[in-house]
Length: 149
Image (tube, rainbow, N blue to C red; front, side, top):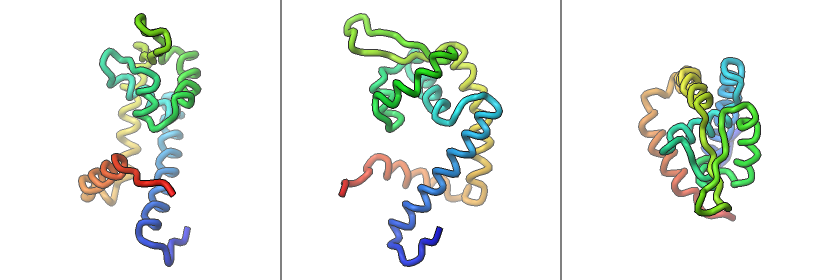
């Protein structure tokens, strides 16, 4: 992809999009071949595993993932079918639904961490020294995504 004659911000965002695509492909491939899950599945399981009591409201999980509530509901269905997550209702408010991680889901995400760590280390290779600054910059960008057109 040629980025000649682009403003630096545009060049950076286009390169970041390309890196993101490559990163997701590599994670999908490695996690799929070793654990039978996608990178999206891993992220869902990871957030649930880290949540207090292993459960999150679906809307809160959507917020963590940057997805809509309906997208999270669709993503959870296959994980429910294979027993990695479950559903729980709020006894005080039937409109509120929780996603909960099962013991099998917790074990799988724990095992998948090593695959994610290996892929991550391989991906950052030559920029390892800049990781601190890059992490700060990405966190700032995520916290303030800017105005829409």
